[in-house]
Length: 535
Image (cartoon, rainbow, N blue to C red; front, side, top):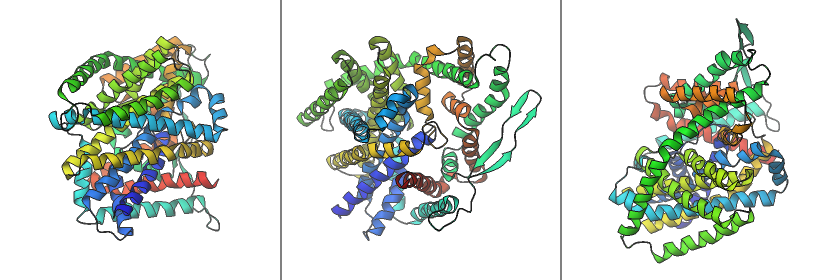
């Protein structure tokens, strides 16, 4: 049984790393993959002809999910280097061993610090404060339900298999001809008064529909607002005599930079207070003890921290960070990762990008960081905070399932190692085959980070209009980050996500369809990865 658990853990880790590496760059969101891993793990155990064991299913799910959150952190932040300095990025791409090594080491260091932070605050957050950590509870409930019957796992397999067949018929392989078109035209280009409506296509892209369905109205409304705002407001405004001297791309990037700047300013208003509270709580951890036995920081924890600290110093010294800058990074990364975990423990969402910005921007002003250093900082904060949160979700699952904490920790470290060894190659493979900034790898989060860095280069009046627009969106409680995606993303990609979200209105129980659509987006992601490998 132990051998099967290890094999399934490896397979799920590779699976989640590959899928989320692609999804985090192809779409503006990073959904938690752990519930899908439960279903996949159940199927794999059946293939090994083993009787389903709830504890084994929990261990392989937690080990695999580390790869998903690590890939999300990389996909959200690391491509920003391409948008900031494409020449340097492409030069790194021409040296695959160096490129893969940098990504893998950054993942291992950031993830290792994330696990250490989770160990440090586990007792306070899980036992003393009894935070919910909803994803851990959701996974536990899914495991309990799946242990008794296979219906949901079969639904995932149906979605997976049908999508593979669809992709085969759409792309054609060997003697199988291409019989399904790539897209269908919904509206031809037309002019209505002073408004130019572009050609609107529906891409036959199952991954986009699946993500739209799973996220529902949360993503559909703001993306639709963004696309409509560009057609009805931004394009006509650009053609006025005030801004006609700017190119279309200069205008839209300046406007979006204003939105990003407003979001950053809003975040900075509340973050110092939150971080101060976090520092006070962290101090109480030292006073009251941080391990589950309440004996303070153990010798093993000090050794683990020392090991990752050495790697941290060696890695960032190579990229010419001063010791003072490294102290700044390490301190604020730990504080922000703790705060990310606290928030996720309450609402189930890891707000990684907001805290990465909080560490990156002051560092840019204090130390004059270059493009590479800014990208490494933001990726480190997202990696550390994301992994710490995911580990605590797994520890919550262990408490509910009665699994020994030490056993769960070993599998989480194992998942981090597998992910670190594979993530650099997967990322390089995807980027080398699919152009960053294209429909396949739009990398919206990374583009937003690039716009924040370059904000001083844009027209100040367009920047101000963008800030006012972002402020208005905040007041009416529409997510500006997703509206930003609707403004910049290709219209056909927005249409697919919105239609997928609207499909939830056609079913009475949305969650009953999750396994099927999880299989769809998993299959389409793997298909894209296979295309990159054979190209």
